[in-house]
Image (cartoon, rainbow, N blue to C red; front, side):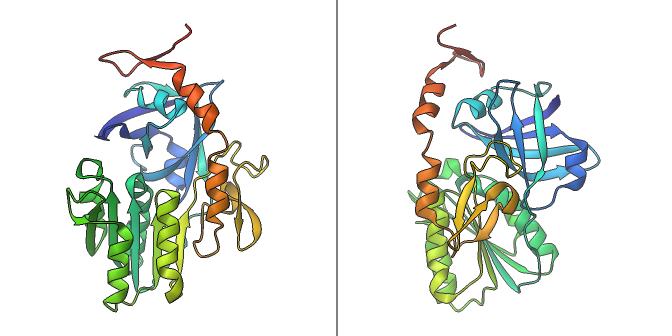
Length: 285
């Protein structure tokens, strides 16, 4: 069992959880992830490790309540326990001195891009970060990204904060202004990562994206997280999670991520919220 030592609410349905996991805290590197399971009957859900504290023996993960398992986790508080936490999994981000690195985070993708921005800056890069959300209240980790970057741009789709537009608008402007970019790291919703890759493609700017498809075992045995990269099959859990954005078959990825939408909807409908609490119960109980 893994104890939740702290829970921080960032915005509606988005939380940071600090979880006691000493071995993972010592070994994790930027870009790696864990898989958690709420209980013996629970599904296995991947989450990127956004930070760790070796002294406290904790890891920090950001969770958005989007399905049954994440809903159950978001209903927990400090002192509660998670049945299983496995990690660190996946390959760490390739870190080197590229010169100038642009880190792009869309929505909750800002959380996994944060440790990468820190690592890139520590490697001697100039880090320009762009973070975006649909509206002001959904912008997360702005101060943390500012501290990890030499330059920070914030965008909102509705214009309620920062630049009115998309993260790709700022990325394109940087390119148009002649900024010599050695690497772009884009993490967020699949359409956003696809758009980032399309912006950089004509300029042949090395672009990394972090994929988060459906996973089961996290060891490459089940094949659930299969993606097509450069025309070849890859498994995100063991070959990724980061890949060259110009080689990802985003159309296939989008379809595969929709494979269980019906089942996910049914699972969520089986849960009812108790007014004034974050507890859940099955509607047929």
